[in-house]
Image 1 (cartoon, rainbow, N blue to C red):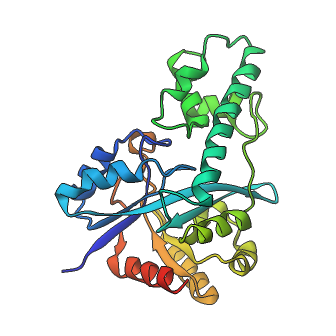
Image 2: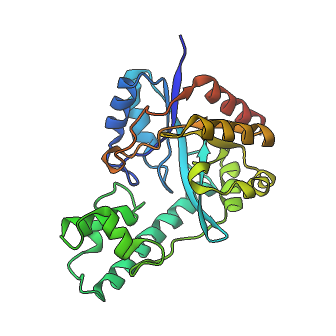
Length: 275
């Protein structure tokens, strides 16, 4: 029997609405054999998801999605099979989470200059079960308080890059992200390249130690998938994929919407051993 995996899933430890228990339930219903928890800039969701998965014979890989920047572009690097208990990556994530909280504080100060003065930092932080708080959480509060009518309006008017209340986030380079993942025993993978559109930078990332590329992503055409399969082959990169599920926060996808053969997980594990 063919086994399947979804290697890009978020929990409410970052910006998803789903608990680890809900993620596991959704994965079982989708017929998955393996999932990876890849919360933004935190590993805190891995342990609880593994605990929830014990009763279901569901394999849970430790993962993370690191935010990095290069040439003015946000570039997300996925780290798989990392040590989620200790190491330099764990230490950096604590700094990044503190920076996320401080970023929201600065955005709230900016919003006050527009008369939006009834939002407390604690309200925003309460929407996540870690300190990996971000703009989607602040956008949700803006909607709840009636300052905007939608998440989109919150971003367009206040939170998008260049908008009135925007503040930059903690910056690491893709090379630094790749190196930290390597130091923590993991394999680095470029997330959703069809969205980021930094194909011209791939040789640079490969030289820095990039191990894979997320070829299989929800709602992509066959032509786009085949294009990135060729890119992966050209640079000798491991192929991965997943749903990028965020619970109710992303309506266009769900756990298991994009799945990959388990054979690709085995290739990831082999690559880790050989590192």
